[in-house]
Image (cartoon, helix red, strand yellow):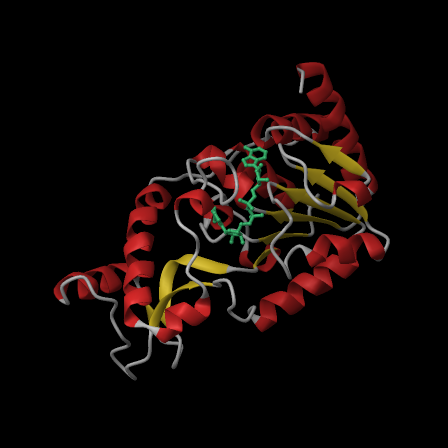
Length: 261
Ligand code: NAD
């Protein structure tokens, strides 16, 4: 996309945002690639390196749980040093300026919170990877504790100290039930929205990808910002095949938003 095309797209998106009274952003892994966290489906993405371990497999064997934690420790190396990118900062500024009613994210990297988005403006559909919980009694564990136990036990996944249940990163795996309250809140925001802006998602992971469809069917305008095509491009009112960082910075300029974060 040329500079002129980017500017035109930013103007179009800013215009839709100005016309809207209840805009919702729906974000995916593509928002965080600028922060150095690989997405799932781009070339070289996490998916191409390691197929995810489904929930049933995690529950069925300690070997799978051990492998899941081993991968998580490796992945956390890049998560730990990651800071919010331009896209996160613009969305945060938009929320604070009242231009966004809320952000529904599929990301688990805590970067929306790190960019200053308040808890009541954010729904994490797939959980949060910055801590762990016992799947049996819901007790919370910090990752430092998991790492220590893992090492003390000679590289084996630890169990809950209280009840012996499996301890898992607080994220939603493939095959795991969606978090009920978050799904309800996301559905409510979706149906209240008059503008639904998808940013950096391949829109193939369900039920999350059902939200933009529901928004559109309910009369909202649908915008898709993604450098690759998505299966929902055909029903979108505006498709912007751009890099997220420069595009959202241009949108912020159009809206006159100061980026003080
Ligand atoms: P995905 O990997 O399936 O899709 C990301 C999309 O973003 C791709 O289509 C890619 O072309 C696009 N993209 C990447 N960088 C971009 C950029 N700078 N500008 C414009 N487009 C860009 O991600 P998804 O749809 O969110 O689904 C993956 C699942 O994996 C999610 O459920 C999420 O929970 C999880 N995940 C999360 C993270 C994270 O928290 N950062 C990282 C990887 C995977």
